[in-house]
Length: 160
Image (cartoon, rainbow, N blue to C red; front, side, top):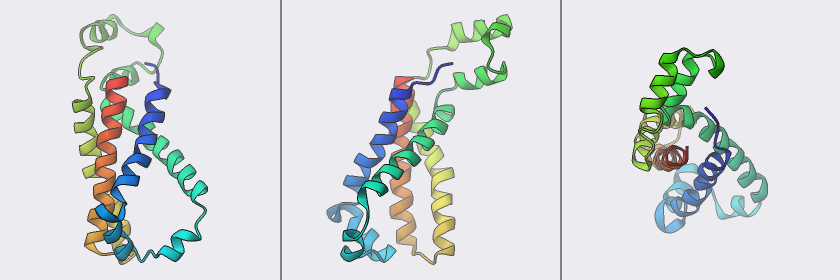
């Protein structure tokens, strides 16, 4: 199996697009600012190039992992240890039968939703508990990552 670098980069970039919309003050930005204790003064003093750059790198890391959750054929590839030359005929038969199945945006979005709900949200929620953040903060930030995981999963799956 080959990695599709373009799909991973597009998936990572999609988080920035979703973030610009999600955290707009007319959407959830106002709630997020109140619940996180963020102020306009703090925003003005931030190094936004560094923040957006690292956000993209972190999102790329997430997209790298999401491909294994959205593209089922990586599971079969992992079963043979990564060396196709040594694969048994059953691997070749499996890939011939199922190599192009479940490669839709909808399928990737489903797996992205599940990863966001059962991985992203609990991570955000746990941090929020220790940081003494509100449940609104957890819902806004966790909801953002669920939506991002869905879009990322869809992009990765459809572009395999």
